[in-house]
Image (cartoon, rainbow, N blue to C red; front, top):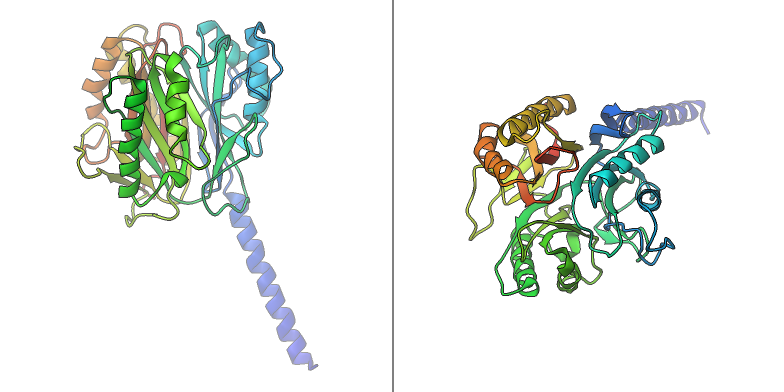
Length: 394
C-alpha cells in the first residue's frame, strides 16, 4: 500500500471525523430552552423544544390499575402519585396540564412541583384548570408531554397499556385541530357525530386516525366521560391517550386533536400553515386546523392577568404577557399554532371574544378551543390561556 494512499485515507478519515464532530456540536446546540423558570412553583413561563420525537401521556389519575392508593387518600398523596408517573417517563417532561378539584389542590400541586424541580433550570411549562374529575374520589389529574431526544420513531405509535400509557410521534410536522362539536340527542350521539366530523378533517389534510397523538374532550357533565371514551376509542385500532376536562355547559362535548403530519407535511414555506376544510367557515379569531412544519415547538404555561374579577382588564394583561413571552421564545402572534382558553365567567368569555381580534392577524389566528370551566387555577382569576407556538421569522 502506497504512502500517498495512506495519507489520503487518513485525511479522508480526519475530514469525516471533523464533519461528525460539527454535526454532533450542532445537535448538542439544539438544547431545550427554559424561559423564565420560577422556583416558587416549579414551572417555566415557556419551554422551547427542538425538533425531536415527543410523547403524549393519557390523563393520569390516582386510582387506575397501576396505582395502589386507597380511595380515601389525601390530596398530597394523590399529587405525589400522579407526579411520579407524569415526570418519571421515558424522557424529559416539557409540559404538564393539571386538572385540580379545587384551588387548594392546585396550590398544593404548585408546592409539590416547586419541591420536585428545586434548584433545576429544567422546569416544565404548566397549565391549570379547576374541574370535577372523571373518577370518583380523585382530586387531581395530569397529562404530560415528554421529549424523546435521539429516539428513532418513524410514525405515530401507542405504547402498551399501563399506568403511563402514552403515544409517541416522530420529529417533524404536526397538526393541531381546533375543538369541534356536533349536535345530538345525548352525549353518545354528539360524540359520534363529532368524531365523524374530525375524521373528515383528518382526511382533508392527508391524515388518518392512526396519526393522532392525543384526543382532548371538553365535556359536560363529566359523569358522561366513559360514554364518550367508548365512542372515541372505536375509531382506533389502538386508542391514543384521551384527556377529559369538564365544562359548565351541559349536555355537550367538544373534541380537539394533536396529530403527527410526517406523511402529509404540507407545501407552505412558512412554519405554520392555516387551513379551513371544505364545508367549514373561516374565522378571524381561530383557525380550524394548523399544520406546523418541522422545527421547534414552544409550550407556554397558563397565563394570568394581574387584575381580579375584571374580564376586560385580565384579558388585556394576559395578551400583553403573551406578546412579551413570544418575543423571548423567537415567535410572535402570527406564529401561534394552538390556543386553549379557559374562562370561568360569562363576562370573561365575552371580553375574550371582543379583544382577541386586536392581537391576531385575521388571516393567521391559531387553532383553538374555548372552555367555560369551574375555575382557572388561580383565586379571583376568570381567564387563563394555554398556548403552543412555532418559530417565528428568522
